[in-house]
Image 1 (cartoon, rainbow, N blue to C red):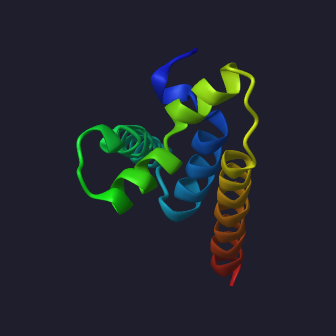
Image 2 (cartoon, helix red, strand yellow; image 1 turned 180 degrees about the vertical axis):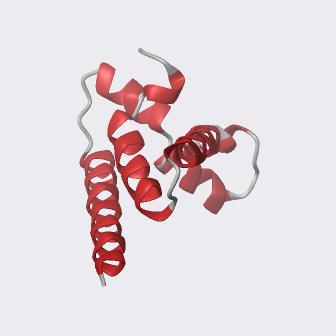
Length: 104
């Protein structure tokens, strides 16, 4: 199944792009990207520990591990695909806006 922190390499690259645009040293942006990826990874396991329905549903919806398990079973649900594509578009949009603002 791969490494737990690299189960969503596209998430890593889009977060790294926006953090590199915001933060100047690349080492700081790498640490911040790693911290955000760990936060997102462990947020996916929150549905095992909470009793609140809305939090349980939100964590299972954004859980990359559950998405990967569904993909390996051969189930192609459009919700994770839309989730990842919309996240990619939003992160790239903000990265472009930040880089354009720096030019001025």
